[in-house]
Amino acid sequence: MASLQNQKAKLALVLIFAFLIRLAGISSRPIWYDEAFSILISEQGPSTILAGTLAIDSDSSAAEEHPPAYYFTLWGWMQVFGNSLTAVRLLSIMISLGIILCVYLIASHLLDSPAALSAAFISAILPFQVHYGQEIRMYVLLTFWLCLATLALLKRQWILFSIAAALAQYTHNLAAFYLIPLALTPIFQKDWKTLRSLTLAGFASIIIYSPWLIQLPAQFSKVTHGFWVERPGIEKIFTLILIYIPHLPLPNDWLPLGLLFSTLTITLAAFQTYRTTRDDLSQARIGLWLAYLSFAPPMLLWLVSQKWPVYVERALLPSHAIFCIWLAWAFTKSKLPHQIQILAFALIFASAGIGLYQHVAYKGFPYGAFPQINKSIIGRYQPGDVVIHSSKLSYLPSFYFDRDLPMSYITEPSGSSTDTLSPFTREVLHLSGNENIESATSAAVRVWFIIYQKSMDELTAQGFKTHPQLEYLDQYFKLESVDSWDEVNVYQYQSPP
Image 1 (cartoon, one colour):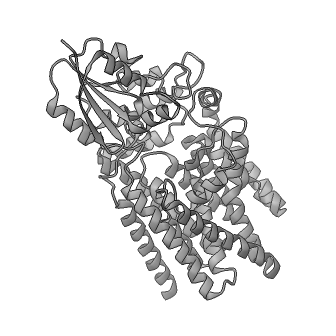
Image 2 (image 1 turned 45 degrees about the vertical axis):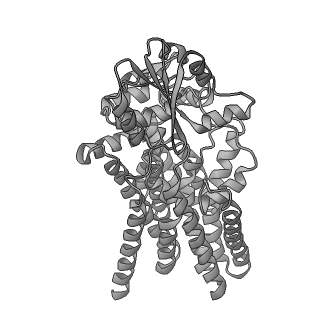
Image 3 (image 1 turned 180 degrees about the horizontal axis):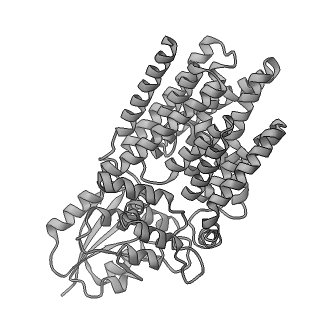
C-alpha cells in the first residue's frame, strides 16, 4: 500500500513538472496562422463550426479539411474560460497532461511502475510533446484519444476502444494512420481471439464515425487539390529522428549536436531491442511492439504521401507518445549496464534542454509580434490609411488580436496549393481579402504593408529582385519607413501628390 502511494506521489510530481514546463511562455509565445484560425472558427459556435466543416466549395472540395471535434471542444472551453491566449492554451496543456497519464498507464500495464514513471517523465520533457501540448490545434487531442484507444486495446476494454477510436477520427482524419498499425497487432501476435473482438470493436467505431464518412471525399479533394503539403523525400527519416528527440527547428549551430544526440539515443535503444530478442523473448516482444507503433505509422504516412501528400509531422504525435515508452523500456528493462543507462538518460535530458530552450526562444517564421505590430500601427493610424497583409499567414494572427483595426490581405490564386482559406470560411469569420495589391491600395492615402521576411527571401532566391507586391508599391507610392519585428517587416508608404 505504501509503495502504491509512493508511486502515485511520484506520478503527481511528474505531472506537476510537466505542467510547469508547458506554462513557460504560455502568454508571451507568439501564435501563428493555424492557432488563430482555431480560435476564430471555434468562437463562432457549434452551428457555424458544423456549417464550416460541412460546406462545399465550387470545386467540390470541403471548405475546411479537418473534422469538427477539436473546434467543438475549444468552443466549450472558451465558454467557461474565455478566449485569451492563456486560456485557450491551457486547454492544450490539460489534454497534454492526460496524454502523460495515458503513457504512464500503458507503460504500467506492459512494464512496471518505475519504468512507467520513466516513460511519463520522458513524455513530460521531450520538446515534441511540449510544443504541441501548448499549441492551439487538434493534434494534442488526437494523441489523447489514440493513446486511450491503445490502453483500451491492451486492457481488452472494447467499448472504450470503439469510442476513443471514433473520437480520434472525428478529431483528425490522419488518425487512421495510427489506428491501422494498431489494429494489425493481433495478427502479428497471432492472437485470433483478440482479433475477433478487435474487429467487432472496429466495426462499432466505424458505425459511430459513419455520419462523417459522407464528408470524407470532399475533405480528401481539399487535401489533394489545394493543400500546401509536399511529397516527402528520404530526408524525412533524418528529420523524424530530430523531431522525436530535440524537435525542430534548431539553430544551424545546434543541428549537428541535436542529430548526434538523437542518433546515439535511437541507435542505443534499437541495439537494446535487438539484444533482448536473444536474451529474453517475452521482454523483446514488448520492445518490438513499442518500436513498431513508434515507427510504423510514420512509414505508412510516408508511403501514402508518395501518391497523395499528407505527410504532416505533427500528426505523428501519437506515435511519439509510444516512442517515449519504448525509450523507457529500452533503458530500464533491457539489462542495460548502469553507466550506459545514465548516459542514455543524459542524452535525452541534453536533447530536451536544447529543444525546450529553442521552443521558448524561437520567434521566427511563422510567428510574429502581432500585438506589438498592431499597437504600433494604431498609434500612427490616420484617415485614408490602408493596412494590407501580404498573405493570410500574418493577417489572421493580427486579426485575432485586433478585430477593430481595418485591415485586409492579398488572397491566394484560386486553386493553388496555398488556397486553403475558402470563400465560405472567409465570410463566416468576417475576413477581408483582396485579389491583388492594386485593388487593395486603389484609394489609399497611406499604405501599411506587412510581410514575412521569409516570403521575400524565397522569391529573391528564385532570382526576383524583390517581392512583386513591394515592386508595385515602390512604383506607385513613396516609401516612408520600414520597421522590422523579428521575421515580420512593416512598410509604410505615402501616396504621391
